[in-house]
Length: 82
Image (tube, rainbow, N blue to C red; front, side):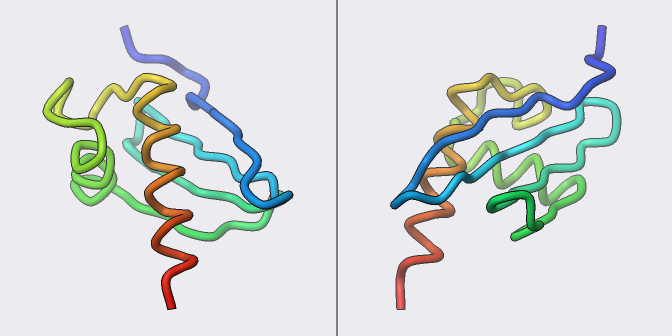
């Protein structure tokens, strides 16, 4: 059964609160920094973004909290790269 509420994880990076939200119903994936939208993906791009850091588990369509945290770490590294 699909979750009706988005899966949400948060982490602090350099004093900034970053949140990843994923909706199993729509496949929408959002990254927010202190509540402000940083990035947004829709299928199939959201699935590929998750699968690229989490491996082939569920093919990115049902990420775990660990998968979303891996995505957050990866995106924060990309945002810091000049």
